[in-house]
Image (cartoon, rainbow, N blue to C red):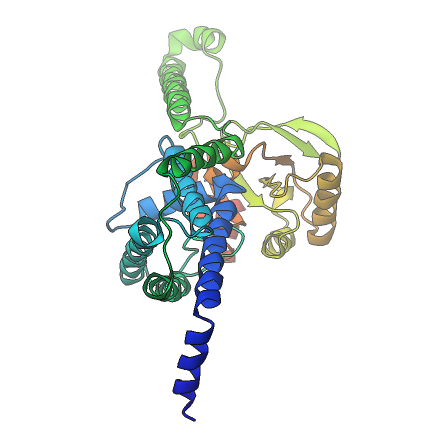
Length: 376
């Protein structure tokens, strides 16, 4: 007998079971995708920010002030659709069509992204749990749409459930999303205000330095200028994103240091990240820390207990031989903002009086000659 005929007979015989299995599988896929974005939600928010920076339909659609609303809305809708697909109610009238439309919209965005930037980066559909390239996400979505069409054409639909059950379910999902996403992040508007005042203070310092220079060149006011305007050896020329980090740990002791003064190297790393350890080992061999300032900002991705995290950091320092002042980032939001254009750690930045002179993300284009030129 023809294999296609056998397959058709098998499908007709087990159609109800197959449609039920496919429907539940896709529902669980939506639920998994939503939960992967929710924990931690900051990773997903950064992916949305990265998307908004790329040319295309979604260019500048969000920022750090508004992304909290976008992320929680997307997760809530995805979680609600996943839960609704588990039950055979209003499937053909609403849930299967809306699921297909959402997947088609996402495919359109991914195709445009590949045409503009190439098949690179994490699409974000599975959060940080299961990174997928845009092409991999397109293949997954095409398969999912095919299965949804099969359920739509062959499955049964039950519309006896009152619609207010779905309304109550959607409300519950929204509350679950908000209550489990640690909504404690500070709006970027606060960061802008802080930056504004820091820039005003910096501008005032520059004016004082200029006045000091003028007075010092006037023969009759040398002593006055020294008393009223004491000379400053180094001036911050720019407020960097690392400006507020002043407390560090070095050789087990707490120290204070200013990143934006002079030449500094900053490394954002995860203590148990192989790529981070590889980068730190390379930097350690340059022995930069003996002449210039090197800082490490460690991220705690799994919210590890502090004592265990310190053991990981000590192991990192021992393995890489990079013994530099370090601090532990206080939140996921702080971490994802400091990653900048990097999808994942490590990120290396060289600053001169707060101005970025060199940047390397994820060990790509690591230019040791340029690093030596800037740091020696």
